[in-house]
Image 1 (cartoon, rainbow, N blue to C red):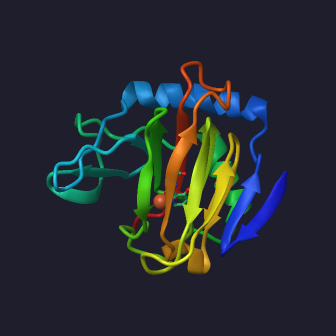
Image 2: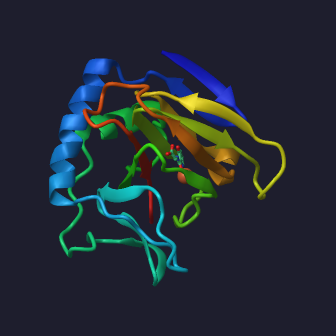
Length: 200
Ligand code: MD6
Ligand code: FE
């Protein structure tokens, strides 16, 4: 495993070995059978290209009513618990942080992307956000504390963990596109990104 520091983003390359990635995918299948992926729309009604679900006390949802954290899946069922292996990883990479309350699950098909955004719907922005990438590679763009300016990109590969803490916590970032067929982890291809956060 290699740990890179880029613009205050900490990237633990290949944190999860292939066997651990496969176990995590099995666990996620179980989570998604209880809380299925949905295609969110932005508050203006534009469909997002990723499909989303969540685990933990809270899930992040977006629809015509806005962006917010909710205690239940749109179907009305509580979000399943965050898998233990993710809680362990969180404790390892951000030992001083509070326990994560949400694990957002984003699924990208070969055409999906995520525009430049800040993660700032959480109450305590001193707490980090940690992500795990699984499956096909995704081109991650790191920007600045305000929109625009110079950016730097890096391919996130399956098993990589990204920590956004300190100044990076409020930095703009996004996924330009994925690289189809760059991983054999997911039988139907695509990319999963999990982001763990403290919400309250
Ligand atoms: C993605 N990641 O990798 C999008 N946010 O698909 C994020 O938006 C992200 O990787 C906060 C912290 C780490 C991340
Ligand atoms: Fe984000």
